[in-house]
Length: 142
Length: 109
Image: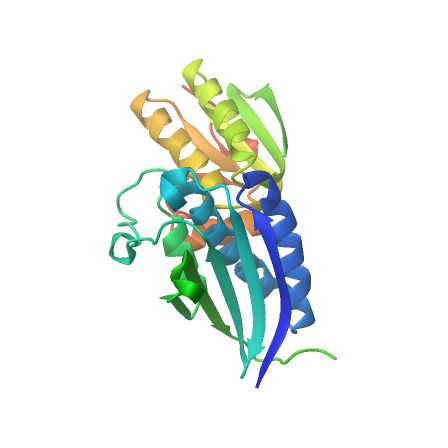
């Protein structure tokens, strides 16, 4: 059974990330996440949105980022949609962490936290649709 | 995010407070690199950091690299639980010198 928890959008602007984090945190706490898991999931979603802001349309994307959070069969699912040019999925990879340099950590952090990270075919073939999934123990609080 | 800089025991101590994210990390980067560029051994006090993302961590990595290049000491002080969690996820918790407070670092030679 799938239960939609929230759907919202933010502009692709770094000064809106604090708002994103607060909405995501409150939503996943409603779904029964404890503070430690909420911290990790908020970080992962923040990193994914940062990647859009920094890299979509080679860093020039100014359109909306749509975020949808669903509870589905013991997992939380986060769908992030943008309307930038399609990303080359083969170019996205975690860097070698032994190579000490700033940047490039976001993909690694998302992969450490989430159970599944996939790009899906976007509706109407426009933009990009990223799906992040995390199995959780507790269900949606009523 | 707010920050201040104070001299303590021969180190420039950059105290970051609040949320160090993509929007605010350029200020943190500027403060940290500014101290190092002035030739100061530098510590970053993270006790007041409630949230840090990979852009904030990148500022710390850049500080460490510049310190190594300039043969200056660089370390992290009073790392908050939230920050330590992110450093562990990035597998950087053993890369930085970390102490509970500035007195844990020997004064610069």
